[in-house]
Each structure stands twice: as C-alpha cells, then as structure tokens.
Image (cartoon, rainbow, N blue to C red; front, side):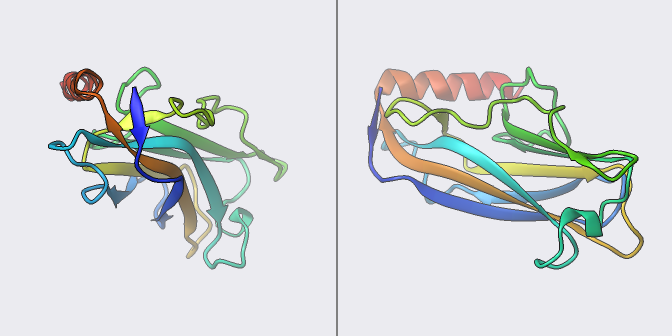
Length: 175
C-alpha cells in the first residue's frame, strides 16, 4: 500500500487558550510533506497532547480551575470548530477533565490516537494542513492553558489506487 520515504519524525504545534468557552485554533502546515503529483502523503502514527499552564514550568492546574473540562481536536479539514467522532476529518482528540475536588481525569475521550507501529499502520493525510481546535469551559483569571500537540509521522508514497481512494474520501468528507 505505502512505501516509506522517511523514518518517523515529530511535528509540534501549540494552541494557547486564553479565553473560556471560546474555540482557539492553530495550524500545522503540511505543504512541504504532501505532494499530489508524486502521490506523497503524510502517515500519522500517533498524536500526543501535553497540557501546561501559563508558563512552561507550570502544570495545567495553574490555568484550569476545579470542575472544568478542556477539549482539543486535530482534523485534516478546516471545519471551523469541533466535530463529532464520526467525522472522517477527525484525526485525533483529547479531553482533560478536572473534578470538583481538583483531581485530573481523561477517560472521557476514548478516541484511538495511536495507529500502530507496522509499515501499513497509520492515518494517511493528503491535505495540506492539520487544524487544531481547543476550548476550555472555565479559565483561572489572567491565565492561559497551553496545549502542545505532538504528531509522530513519516512521509510515504502511495500507489495510484490508494492515493486516489484517500483523496476521494477526503473530498467526500469535505461536504
């Protein structure tokens, strides 16, 4: 199905949420990794999320008060906001919850963000960007919640049929 052109590498982007109940966005440009003419795609192996407070040395508790939820999604199409789990554009999602007693939980988000380690395992992306959307229900006064998204990926060349199938699926998901 896919021929690897590179070893696995990591793309990172941070979304800084500074207003509660307001979607905050960021973009990872894939223009230099995806090439339609050569049937070159990005194969995503896993996506990790790191939640930090206002500065890098502070934990999420710095910005995230008790009884709160933060949701972050990565999509390969710009939907202009959050999507349901059945949307084909959804690449990965995360949810961090803080209970009324201050404990952090994340089990509400069960979307598989690890696609395996085999040569054919992964989510293939042929679009020119990944879109990150984050939101928090409440934010401590004057604080910012920073969420870093780490995408572990490699560049692959797909067969004509496979590239066309992924491109058609992506175009169909755009509607």
